[in-house]
Length: 579
Image (cartoon, rainbow, N blue to C red; front, side):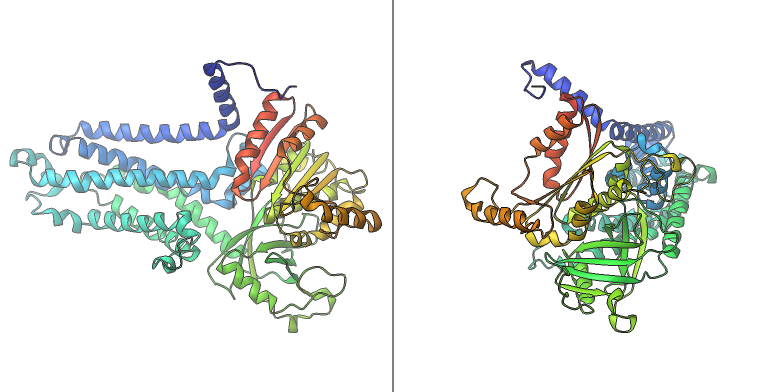
């Protein structure tokens, strides 16, 4: 009854309530965006007024004031754009401090894109005002008006437009605009994910490699930016040339990040086991590097030089912090992952009786280093992700679509480790120091919903499912597998397979589809019923809703989390994984 539609017909009151809900759910993003926009506006106005009161304004007018105001915001944004991609720093801050309570670190890449858009706007205003307005006005100014400009441009008036372009400030600015335009265009999802048609002649020029290499052209851009900032026509005092002051610390921090990454990813990990599963999934089990500590839900970058010496790709960790190995499950969805699956498949054999998968290779079962022929893997990480904050919630609602179940499986295994006798229930987080060690493991209940189209996908985590069913005596973890390619129970078209499933499960205790004791449901879940059930069973508790998968389900789950939070006394907090 609490979820019944409101009888309030006032559109004003309804919109006001929706606005309050929006602010409540997005207040972290709102204050960060408000602060960023306010700083950009303040810098623009400050520099605009400064040039409004200079002699050059009488020749170039509002064009020069606009160009200089945009330049000031550009310096700020060129410094700021590096901070959201300092992954080690962000991971440390969100893991060791409480700043994450007010700063939305989960949106770091989105904020990076927003700042890049701000850079694009600043470049358009700055370069556009100079090239189309300032320079022509100066060239056509009268001798009397040009007189105050002699200290800046020389006693003799610039002879033509080319004089400005070939100057240090001119050519460095143009080269920066060209490089940034290329990087900006190739970073768009349409080009980065290589979604162009095969007949398109530009297809060979797009993809991840094009994105990666053009993004690293920014090393040249920052070098040119410093040169550009020291070659200004209208500013001669060194202490007023502030470009280097803006970018010095962010560039230093980002350089340190890359150095740390270089040294940390130098040694290759030892491959212990490889499995190729239906659905084009490759599972890699590797040794855990010395001192490698992580939380469930985090991810690592992987590099395989046998595939590509430069490409690093992120993958969620599927092993739990308490395991003595490190594992990832990789679905082949592009050129790099396809080649990775191929090179590892060459060292595998068909599975023995009782083993899952299509191909397997296990060093613990007779395959030695001499004949395994595994390519070397380098890893970098771990890095923070939205799912790592699961320990802060009383109840977990974990929802994975297809391969999106990978970070959630790690959480399920970690919860299982804590509820077993001898587990560290209420203990410290792994690898914590200082105050971080006092954090309690708050989770008392977990619901895991895994939706996949292919029944062969259940082989990916069959061992985890069986382990939970065997060791979870108190039924703290509730597992729900859904095969969406079969019609729901009660539909005549799925009657035969439902009957076979019931017979198999009653006779042997094994599900006919998943091969585990966890019974598979058909069709997609009714998500409103799922949320309703959790809300009824856990009144006055905080529920962490963690979703990983295709974006199509995000709006519905976010809306349901908001509805049940506002209309019941159970608080749902929605988190989504960013691919």
